[in-house]
Length: 160
Image (cartoon, rainbow, N blue to C red; front, side, top):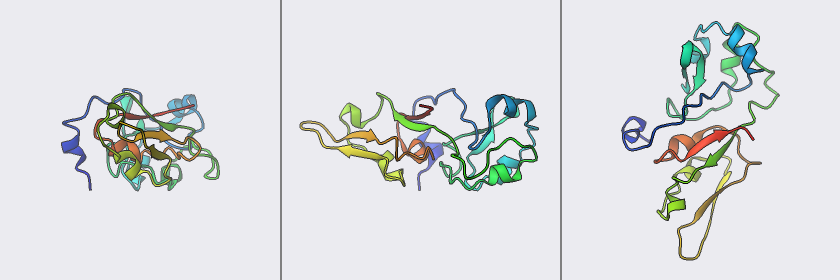
């Protein structure tokens, strides 16, 4: 088990972009109708939903278990009709690796792939270098497990 509070002492500042909850219909409806009652925060099985700016719930992959299990509990406990049905895709975000990645800087590290249940992050061997990470976006669920596992915060979620 990773001690995230200690690890945060050594990582760079996290992205200021706030990650919204899975299955949200749209940002405007969310802002207008969310009561900020914290039912989703309390109901999250992996404890990654926290209060963000203005008290609105956001995803923090560095909190709790560090990844979304896609349990749909946040949507089920919400008193407002803010969420799509569970059979819809939870979100379209995928992981991306930036230049601060240790492996991209020739330092052996595979923490992200160790955390990736869908095996969307694979490493390819390179002559004279450490193995380089590649993300197969078709396999990436956007769960965030790789984010919490990265020791240098080189992974973030983007919407393609």
